[in-house]
Length: 242
Image 1 (cartoon, one colour):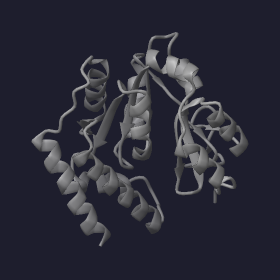
Image 2 (cartoon, rainbow, N blue to C red; image 1 turned 120 degrees about the vertical axis):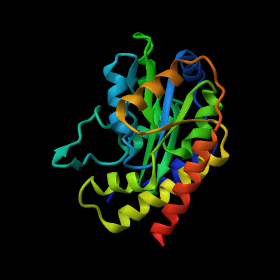
Image 3 (cartoon, rainbow, N blue to C red; image 1 turned 45 degrees about the vertical axis):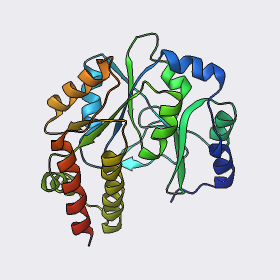
Image 4 (cartoon, rainbow, N blue to C red; image 1 turned 90 degrees about the vertical axis):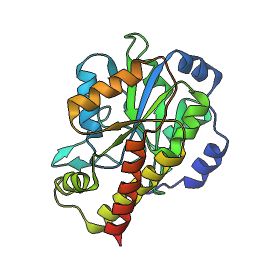
């Protein structure tokens, strides 16, 4: 199991973290779309579809956790994550070289590096990656024109079917993912910065995200359909957990 040996140092730095001035100057030039979604909504598949169309560049986040095997395939540095030692990550934070970083389950720290974002400028592509909701307020503070998109399953029944279709998963892991999902859904109801996409199918979702990302408007609003869906997802997930 991953463990943060220097968790207190990370907490102290993150309490009042801000990117360096050079990092802020780079951020002004970057086009950025971030996806927030519960597990098994097809987030990674949608991102791959967007990257195929050459408008988007996938941003690989930094992580202190160890590489692991997914379905028998070992993770590769620079593909799933940039794997960093705790000292390397701390040094980057001290220098203000991250847009944001977050401690996850007290086991690892992940963050979006300015270096990775800067790499999208030469191709004039939209930087895209997924993000945990804990880092969003920090991102908006330093990158207020970022497009924050919440990808939602079309129904609880469909979502649970997709989750179970991922193969064997320990029951405590299922509960953890569902509990995290409730936090996401509740955030969708109260926080004003989301655009919403309902994941009926990959192409439709990708096209909708592309439209939002290319739009010059920063206005986001929640429709009655999305509001009702979020409430249903919360209610049904809580019932399932109980």
